[in-house]
Image (cartoon, rainbow, N blue to C red; front, side):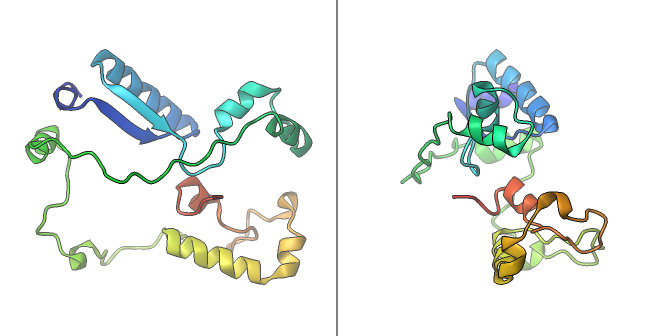
Length: 177
């Protein structure tokens, strides 16, 4: 971090509300504070910051109390897409190599990125395209959509009895925006 802080004025990253991420981000923010590096932490793929919502009222124990708290919250306007991104430092490749950060070189071909002989351990395929496909497929069944009740889903089935969109929402592949 010290090497990096000599070259960096600001570290930007997306906020995450999961306990492991809160702990990780807290450590990173503390290191940045010590090294006098500004931190820009944003909530990018949700309409509201859950931590801010919790500060407004009592913790929501049911949907009704959640809606009461939500009514006190102002949803922020989304950030506009930047017209230009800041350039990396001229010596960024050398700096990344010194820090042990593995980055793609210009010699990498798309065929190099294909995983071969990889045993699949999950039924979830990542990415925005897959998330949109699952959402579109789910929305075709109007009865299922209209009668959806979270408490009545079955978590032990081999195929999801829910929308199966949670991981796509969590990792920003699909957004409520």
